[in-house]
Length: 503
Ligand code: NAI
Ligand code: MG
Image (cartoon, rainbow, N blue to C red; front, side, top):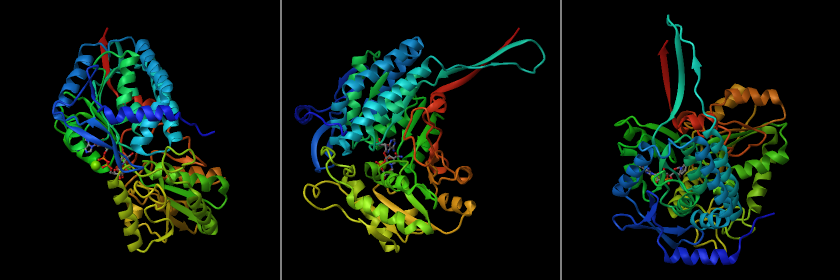
């Protein structure tokens, strides 16, 4: 059943957003940016400005970092008993569930995604991130070690929180990504300055309200909305920040690495992808085809792990392409507020132009739009940033559309003719990225042999578990550094210390 919302809640929310500029959340209080600057928030389904948020800059970032520093160095957060920290994280999870309708409506207005998706991301995705990571607060341990050095020793390792974390998130899943960034950091005793994306600042501000309501001490989480090259860059440059955790473009990821060399602050990067989907002749096509469609059309393709390159065995190629084409034609494109919408708009005019530009380049390079290929037309779509679900055939590995991340509902389809797994893996790996991958076959040996050969942080065989807080997520090659989620995601917010005692 599709979850619905109350029209009264939406009307009240719209009214409130139109009349109250959203503020920064620093040291437990809401405040305007020091400069008084604001940024316009656009509804991508209509192209209209519907809200304003404070545009923080270097000065506001400095205030936020100092607040986070005090909450860390003074011990109020890292010194709190882990069980008590865990309790606050679970309380925040409960509050998110209680307020998920308002969060999801805000997300849909701001990002464009279907309400049902936004609600699931908040009520399940975000709250489970908090619950999972809350569990780790009381479970992270070091080891005892027996040195071989002559003498009698007591030696052990311990994990200590890294310190102040700067978390920079993108606009494709604004709320759940913000929560996924802060949850493990907080569980380990770190304090945080969160910088949401300028396109989608609103749901993070609700997160600030709920953090205050849950009773987190002042300064533990600070939220500074603003632009990337001002607020974002200032956070990366700040000498009092110990670690940056970032999700976004590979270009900005590289900039962050360069900027971090001054202080050698720790950096975790979750960057772009160009993930392959490989379908073998024996696959359950009734499952593989809808999954491949949602893997590229879900959230309008604005997903880091989107399956954007499809490799299909020659003998089922026509059948798979027909099935996908049918799905693309049927897909209900529209406002995320409409109950039957399956795919919303792209987040911004900039992304719209970018995606249309890629499609055009693909066609010039010789690809053929089997379906889609244009901006959506029709009632209520013209003002928004809607693109038709698009399938490009006749694509080859060397084309720009097959090499670069498009971040839109555009699938490049290619065929393979043999059963040589080395050759298939070479096709799948022929990209600078290595975030995710998908294999469809009923032959477990084929699946696992290909899984071994694929250079990607995630391999999904016959369907994926989605993003699960227990399953590590991250990239090989230019898809990033480090891992989020699971034990690796928790340890990324700690420093390992060895203590040796000569007895
Ligand atoms: P972006 O990488 O510029 O933005 C992501 C975040 O980084 C935002 O919060 C932004 O304000 C911040 N940022 C930008 N410049 C910064 C800087 N110099 N220092 C610190 N923070 C900075 O991504 P953008 O421009 O919005 O999208 C461009 C492309 O990036 C997309 O088309 C897509 O290919 C890719 N992308 C990938 C994402 C993923 O989930 N891996 C998410 C968003 C974008
Ligand atoms: Mg950018």
